[in-house]
Length: 269
Ligand code: NAI
Ligand code: 15L
Image (cartoon, rainbow, N blue to C red; front, side, top):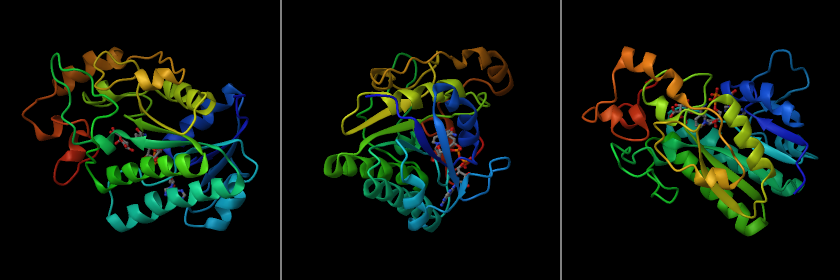
């Protein structure tokens, strides 16, 4: 399919949204921005909550595709997650369906499978079809988002890609992140692939850089045309010297979701 041009970027005020505002235009996209918070220096950004269905209809009208980042990005109360991530994502998909927007890229998370034991030693990479094991209400909302995407693909023909993002920040800050980190530049590459690949229906992929210490299978993302260029290993010596290697006996180090799997879930870790 021809590359979509005008993209609605939800969650544009957030960490990832800010990084992608800087990187996606170089792929030729014109961005329409939406967030519940105003964005400094972006007077045309739409300030709206995902609960505002009228505003969402207007926001999606006429765009070629949507990158959906808005929502609560850490663990919270079930009520807050329900409003922002579950109802909010439904409102967004429904607005897109009503306005005929056919392509949506959904920011899912590794926390949809967070209780999956992490590979150790020569263990194989975690495959895409590993059972869902959300580690938090947050992770549960990402499972919902993936199933919602599947429903809209099957029932309405929405072309949609759910990216189970690892940790996308300018640099990894923990030893765990050496395995799950996605550089911002690789994130933009993967979003571009997800926006332009010949996708029918719903596709789920893991999102990370080509890390030496990778935990999951990047083949589904590569099948979209994603070619990661970065490897967190360049940060390894410093982080391991400061924090030590992951300890398999530490519950915060046992699973993909790291310290989201502890009681209570901890961040940062
Ligand atoms: P963030 O918390 O920095 O940004 C989220 C943005 O969504 C904020 O600007 C917030 O104002 C907005 N938002 C929250 N609720 C909203 C609502 N009801 N209506 C409108 N806007 C709302 O999070 P970050 O790190 O930028 O993550 C973006 C997305 O990517 C999130 O969906 C997160 O779950 C997902 N993700 C991020 C990862 C990362 O490493 N940064 C890893 C895995 C998933
Ligand atoms: C996520 O889903 C969060 O949004 C992000 O803030 C990090 O916690 C990331 O996962 C991670 O697993 O490191």
